[in-house]
Length: 341
Image 1: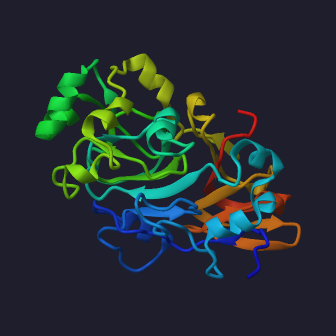
Image 2: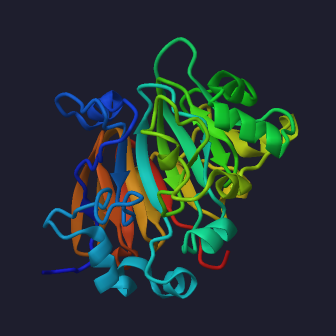
């Protein structure tokens, strides 16, 4: 099977989740109907769901899994510098996430915790790019407002005191163009009606503090670890206004052909820009993911081109250079961290 690395359009890839949503993904992509439990579209994913062999992996148009294509031809897909830093991992997971209901309070492990307890070089730092909202009061929740001791957290989790856990978090109203960096260990939740492009390290590791009403039971909440061990990765420190200001970026009113989207603290983990190419933008060589939010345009490279339209998702290999975007359209361009970081 041909594994030549060229830019390729990707179909929706929505493995069933435990929470509702997916209507905004269907509307963006222009498809009929939405799976009630399809709130996540894993775009250009080489990551499988925790506990599954292939669920979550993205197929290419010819049926080959992107994971397998990259492993067979890492030099073309990723480039030599990336491989030297990250091996044959893309070092990136991108999702469209449409919260049809509030997500539970949860957090993700750090790289150090993942190496020690989960056998992975990657934890799960993530970032959210808000691309749509619905309802009167779209919000996300990020970090505890005040320091919380370990015994208090253990009691909240043990008794499943959902209202207290949620009430202890910073409640942040959001609108399209807002971005939020979520460092590993930070407790968080996403409110109903918030539609995101989500960048993550390439794992499916979640420590679910609020599992009642969401998961089958406590045994599904901690990645196979005991509660005490799992909660060691939780950041129990309060996040004040100064820290939140460093994690949250408001970009909705910014114009220009290329708008950096993420906080400086997110750059060691992933990169993202909003692109409005007009007469043309050339992309530097890199593995990347394009998500078209509006309009029409075209992606050109040395020996081919692809049309761009609202809802299109495209994976770009390093070897496709030079890649040029043209057209009256708005896109989000997601990339792994620069290899030197």
